[in-house]
Image 1 (spheres, rainbow, N blue to C red):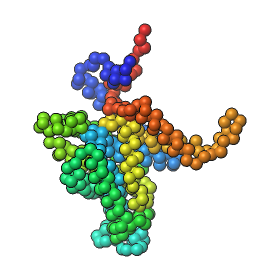
Image 2: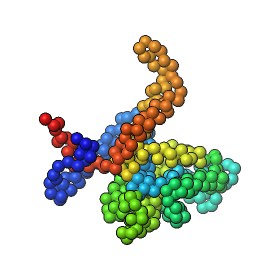
Image 3: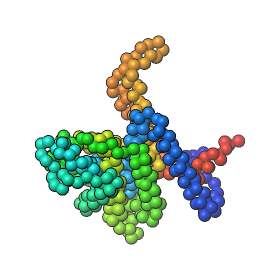
Image 4: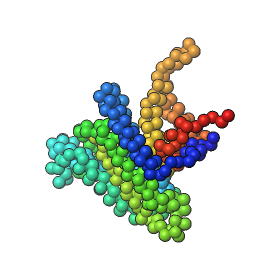
Length: 362
């Protein structure tokens, strides 16, 4: 059976019955995931819990980045700027005045940030709104161009934000960065944000706005001829993507407890680009799956750098072999699965039931 056949099974029951069944199964799946997080937090090794938090945040970043790059088809290279903005804003709002005074050695932090200290949740909301506002303002010059030119312009904006963070001593503490950020991010924050992100973006993609975004991706000129305002639809995707990237950046800052401009270079964006391409451009399910594989796969591949015994031979550990294997895996995926792991397919309960009902041909 072809790959398409897995995602397009036979006749369905009535639409209302199917919808109710899918809703119940989704609720049960969320409860099972919550139970798994509870057990993981209470019994797993702290390092595994930490990596699971990182996987959840990278999944948020991949899903939100996929909205503009995969669903809308706009080759944007700016996530490092939005994540940096969210990380710095959240950290500056949650650090206590004494911690800020201790960190800002070369120049004192500007007022009123020097006296502000608020809880994490409002800080995340403010960071997301400010990041979305920055994206909205960026969108006016950015979406005057398309294709490769759009990539160059957004790449330039990302570098501008990084350079500003590196030189604004009284705002970001320059290259010294921010240290002593309270460790507030846990499994519930990271995966709770992923649940909210998936709910919002999946609902958007499956709405009339989502169909318009896909029309812009396929042929922007034809979409405009059919009455779709391509500019404002691209602005919607860009702004919403920036909001979640900013919130994820804030949680990332409170997970690693220290941030600096060197963490938000183009390589950060490049890693996210690898994730959404490997998962399948346009597939939210693929973005989540690839983010998990990217995060945990990098740790599993550390084994190839350790000394080992093979066929009676002692093979010394070779530093850097992990990246060699990682590169070979990427080459293999791109050669044999050119549309990524899932292409543009999405998970559905219908597909899962059809998968278990399949029978081999006689």
